[in-house]
Each structure stands twice: as structure tokens, then as C-alpha cells.
Image 1 (tube, rainbow, N blue to C red):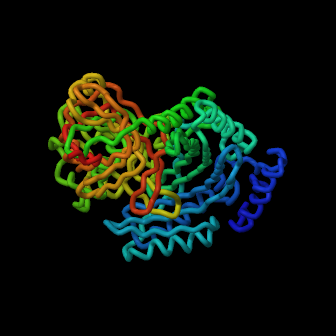
Image 2: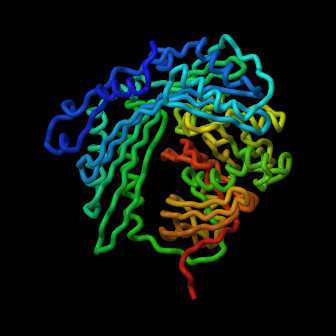
Image 3: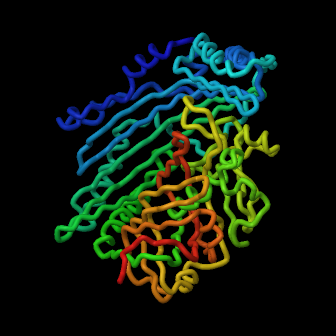
Length: 513
């Protein structure tokens, strides 16, 4: 069966979730306001568009007609749903469908790429000819049969998000809103946002592999605004994972709400610390953002292949103390950054970038792994079928060290703890960074003495890595909905870190005369 995209979208729109604000505001029931589409088949590309092995073989032959070192077809069908609630009233609700196929051919360092939303043979052949135009060599022999790889099991779901109605989601948003309000009378405004995605990809490679992956995703965010004596403060918390509806237990929701409220209310007591050079303790969990941005990006192979990363000639050399080990692992079940296979069809795994202070490996896609003559690390990622893949992080973290959190705090005579972050900028090549710390603590005489707020920390990633003098044994991944941007592409990631002491950073607090 072959259906043109325009006809298909028209058909799906008639049966997909339809939500309009007037319906909600007029008091109609949720069931009246929504209609669910028919369930998405396990392989929508075959079921809906007739993309069989013969079709893939013909398109691959066209794609590699002028030569290729490697080539792939990346099919994607994604349904996304978003809900927002402001002060107990649904303010926005939408659903969307995105689908298409990206076609890539690589010869040396040259990449030809094209995509089409129309998953028909003629459109795919036209796109293949466009991508193949970068080459003028001899055609390679494309496979006529494909070997399906085993489906991964990192994030299986009982009920796909495409089949979950809005009537199952609204009670969760209402519960979060109610819980946030009942704790303290100073809480005046609560905003709750919801997102879920049902993403199905199929990847066909030049070496004859066929990969299917069903990728769920969900994220829930609570934003709280409180007022005391005319002073306004706000804070938030969110949770995200490759999970299904059953993940949203009352316990998990209440913990997220408590965190959002506590982060907000503590700001009424918080001060700005003195500015200057001082030790900074990076709190376990969310401080992984600094590890990710200021250090992890510099270990992605494309930056090193081009010589723009400070780590480009550091393989086998010491970059940190012996108790520092940094890992990127895409195989942590149900994590936001987890993947059974990367977007080139390579199995994801565990890559130790820094082992006992020594730089051991970059993060490789198929292009860089071929040039470095090493195996791919399952790090080839793309935002969607409209983009070519490149080396990216998945779940990046530092492993436990030999110290305890209490030992680290006791070792600091005058410094701060950086706990939650709202903004940051990094110059990836040099590793210079600045991060805005929303919540933290002042440490004096080896003890926590006061909450702090609105602090900038400034430094250099490679230098900060060298200045890590203590690492605690409390490593954890942050559960927030982190999204990484690089070269205009956004991908979901996870990150984490134990409590870490950096001996010296620039802290942008208050100048004290």
C-alpha cells in the first residue's frame, strides 16, 4: 500500500487528538474534546507506505550510483503532544506529526545529504540523486537484501504515547498544580507543562543492516512563582525519561513539586556571595551541565578532527587527577539520553573518555571513527530526518571518587556550592564558560552558612578539570529534561556528576569593599 504524505496527513488529522481552547473553557468533558487516532503500527514505513527491502535497495543503489564510503537511509515518524496549564486552566494544547526520510552518502570528508517528507519511491529516488551529486566516482554495489538487527529493550512501553488520550494526562497536571499551591500561602502562580513523543525510526545502511527503534519520551515541568512583602521569586523543577504513563506515580510527582517549591521559597532568604576567585563545590546531579558543556563537547571527535578542540592532541595524556573518570553511556535504561542504536544504526554502549585522569577516547560517529581508525562509539546523532548525524553525547557523567560530600564541605574555608543552573554559555574550542547559578550555598569555615542566589561562575573547562581536587562517592544522574544544542540541532541528553570540589573559579557575586 502506498499513500502520499498529503493524503496520509489529511487522513490522520481527521482522527488524531483535536483540542481547542473554547471546548475546555466551556466546560465540556475531556472525552468530548479529544479523539484518538488509530494506533501506529510497529513499522509504519512498511505498513503505510510500502517501503520494503526491494524499495530500500533501489533507493540505496541510486544514492551510491556515483560512489560511496558509507551511506544510509533514515526514516522517521514522530507524533508529539504538548499541554500547558496556567493557574489550573489549560492554556495550550497541541499535537503534531512529523515524518520523512533523510538520505546520506559519504565519500572521504564530503557528505551529500537530502531529505523528503514524501515517502514514495519517486520522491526518494529524486532525493537520492540530489545527495549523490557530490560524487563522480564509480557506483558501489548496494545490498539487495537487508539483515534486521535485534530490537533493543532499553525503553519498551506498555502503552505508546500515540495511544494515550489527553484524559489520562490532565489529571497529572491538575495534581501538580494543586500540590504546589497547598504547601505555602506565598505561592501565587503555578505553571505546568507537559510533553510526550512517540518516535519510530528505521535505518538502512550500505553494509546491509536494517534497524528499527521505537523511542518514547516524556517530560513534565512545574514553574512556581511566590510573593512575600512585595518581593517576587520563581523557581522550577522538571522530570523527564523514556518512559510511559505508569512512570508518573504520585510519589514521583510530589517529589518534583516539593523540589520546585523549595527552590523558590529559599530564594527569599538567599544572599549574593562576595565576588572573586574562590573554591566552588559542584553539587551532585544537576552540576553535570558544566561537565557536559565545558568538557564533554570538547571530547566530541568532529571538533578534534578539525583541530578546534583543546583536546585534539591529548589522547593518552593526563587531563585530570587520578580519581577522575568521565563516561558517556547511551545504554542506561529509560534515561532521556538513552538509545538502543545511534542515528547511524550503530549499537550504543559505554565510552570511557577520561579514565583515572587520562584522556582515552573521543566520541565518534562513522566518519571520525574511519579517519581515526577506531570503532564507532554509537555517538552519531541527529535531531531528525532533516539533518545529517554528527558526534554527540548521550548520558554523560563522572564516576564516584574516594571522598564524601561532608569531607569536601569541611575542606573549604571560604567558597560556594553551586546547586541549580538556569543559563550557560561555552566556547567549545577553548572551553571558556560562564554559568548562571540560581540556587546555591555559602560555605565558611568548612560549614554551610547561608543560601545564595543569582551567581555567575566563570572558568575554562580544561583548566577546571585539572583543578578538581576532590570527588565524592555520591554520583547521580539529574532527572531534568536536558536538551543539547550543537550546530543548530537539538537532541535529548542526560548528565550527572558526584559532588566535586574545583579549587578555584571566578564567582560573580557582590563586590565587598
